[in-house]
Amino acid sequence: MARPRFLPDNFTLMLIGTVLLASVLPVYGSFVRPLELITIGVIFFLFFLHGAKLSRPAIWAGISHWRLHLLVTAITFVVFPVMGWALRPVLEPLLTPDLYLGVLFLCTLPATVQSAVTLTAVARGNMPAAICSASGSTLMGIVITPLLVGLLLSHTATSSDPLQAMGRIALQLLLPFALGHGLRPWVGPFLQRHAKRMKGLDQSSILLVVYSAFSASVVAGLWSKIPPAALAILVLVCALLLALSMGLSAWLARRFGFSKEDEITIVFCGAQKSLVSGVPMAKVLFEPSLMGVIVLPLMIFHPMQLMLSAWVAGRYAQRQSPAEPVAPVPIKA
Image 1: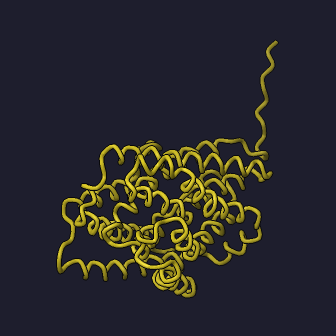
Image 2 (image 1 turned 180 degrees about the vertical axis):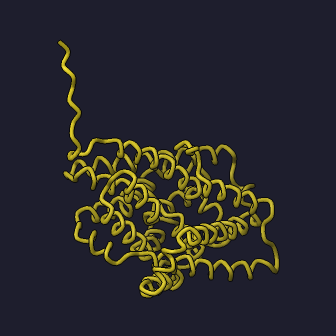
Image 3 (image 1 turned 60 degrees about the vertical axis):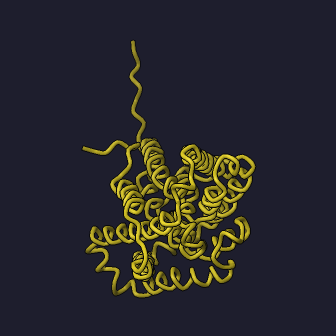
């Protein structure tokens, strides 16, 4: 039986379970450093896999559509941060200061790759452009996200200055990504043959990073610092950001005269944020005690964007293609 579109998928349920496990059984004492080293290795492996999966022909097939990529980049790295910054007078009193930092961090992140491309395919959008745009967003985020964090967030919340953070992110994320992509001719066929197993390793890696992040924050008193009312408001804030970004993406695509296929790509590449990139970046940019509260908005936003986008993709897919014949209307005598 197919899962209803507005119910969370299995990975979302596992994320929730991981947060609960870290809340009940966080890592203490001498186990913290080994977990940290394992997490660094897992992140390296995760981005190596993402680089190896990236198809070079798909990049060249979509890269020529510069107007679309420019708009997606503007939505991801300009519109989103401006929305988060403009809402500060309203959000900061309603949320805790740390939760608001988490919302701003969410707004600075690059687009997700896998779900954006998958949803574009379901909705019958421009697939080559989606692959190119989402992948390019991930790479640009390695440079742009630390700069935006340094510009928008309080310097005391970060563990280093933006340039140092950019270097650490490049070492931990860009280097394995480049290595994986360079070795794609040799490892690509293996990954394709074992796609299901690789997906399981991919998700397991994210779960371990999330567990490590929340474990450190729980030890530092995460849940005692977040009032239940602020948590409920955070859910509404994430829903508002998602609705505004998807609606604005669709409106801008139509305003600038893009085709329906391009509009779909713009909506799914511009209005989504990457959990895969976000959690590792947060580990580099923020102190361990702040990690849980900083990534909490992203953890809420992630399942929301998947469930709402799945419904939107279904609506797009139901549209009639211009190539499809129009059924004749019976004329009553």
